[in-house]
Length: 309
Image (cartoon, rainbow, N blue to C red; front, side):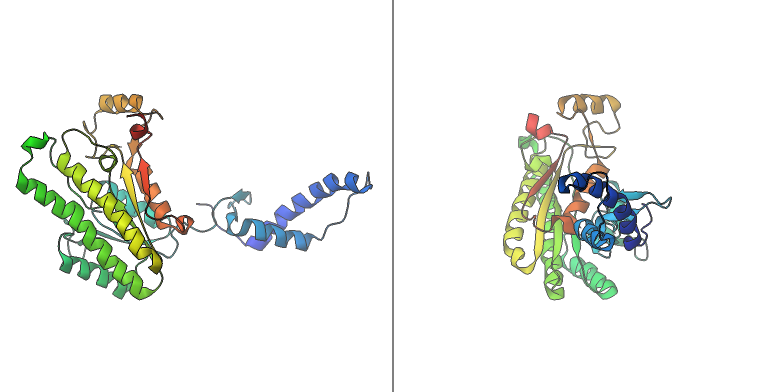
């Protein structure tokens, strides 16, 4: 990311370019053809600073650039579950790239490692993780409820009850416990926060062969609505993200099969296949202050698949 230099200096450079252009444009309108009107450059600098605020920065080479001067998640404390691999790992990395302090958790985590051991079905585990985050960092600003499982595809009538229950326990109760525990900490900190729940396009429509998984993702979608409604007055936003099949992850039928990717891309209006980074970027936006008025909404990231089918 370009290095941020002194904003005042950047604005002065821009003002030096803009002022003569404004003068040439305004002079004929004031009957002073051939003359360049005088402008208060300091006033123009202040005007530009008001208009562009933190959007002005400069490249190391000295070239002005209109981009965010601060990372989207600067100084935010974010917990990402299921972050041992795949989408969770990629989301955690991109959150960190955007300035967040990220706590990664996963059922495969080990004490003392970069990934905190965490069984999302256990309330005590949630309390340990969130209490640890608050103790270490003073607060929690964001939670990404990503941990989930999916069974092999099978017809609805062949779904074993015990597997259905296990999947609901992880995908739904894990989300419930995470929302409750994180929200309590956010309320105690009195700074609000953002919770992002990972649902799926299977929580938007019905896909054959994944009734247990789809049911769990519809439930996550519903939990998001209820959470947004009840937690909103405390300044806590709750939104859901609904990925389609993600290339390069296990959340894609025919994983790592280029032919399958090509077929999927052809069916999607954008003629693309979603990558995990695409979904992670959407999560980052929902965690950031740019989405400060967005809550209770579904963000579908599927290259248009559910629009066309």
